[in-house]
Length: 323
Image (cartoon, rainbow, N blue to C red; front, side):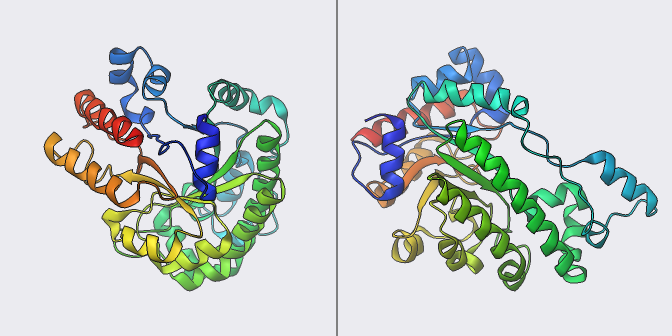
């Protein structure tokens, strides 16, 4: 059984030969990993990672149009100004996918399950409005935001089509909705304005025979039932350190979607001494091993994590996944 088969079976709740493993390690630790292993790719090969997280593809925002609208309105850009404007670049030029295709081909050649990241709605438009303004606009311009999110959903289904045609197994929607103890905004806003366009994306990807996964940091228990209803196949990270306990997942959602995570970058790896880190990793394996779970970090491992601690964690994960 290769990584792709192992992850697919885990997502579907079917038997596997071992627990799949992965980790978000490259963003902050590329240099120390390269010094120790030769490259991040060599690290991934050494620990026999089952998944590859793929980035790339065309740019989304047409900044020339957006900057012009901002300048014409005294440096202010609000959602109502964009409702009737075509401000997204077309995602159909295949030359824009060259690096993404190369990454897909590389990891598929190693038998890995591949998921391609694409922006969601709230997280993505924080880049445009700023998160403080965006939160304010959920109250001032909810209908306009809903229309903008709908435009984004149509862009995303076209992007997803291209990625699936290139061989991606899964489309990974990144859309942070949670703070440390609750959601960043009203669950009702989520149901009214995020659920409908997200449903469009999830249903379309499924119609193409691919999986759909969600990344959302923080506590999203306020819409966990909605996440299940949307039909996501996998959720990252199910953040225990933000109050989302695994017992709730196992009792209510384990038959609805898989989870990717379990190794917390906020409270464990790079933070705990090795004896306590070992106890924490063993605890999570004790709870989730054999379930619809792919062992992974909850986000990118931070640069305060030493290469010694990273190796210690993955030596143990490699062992526990095979016991």
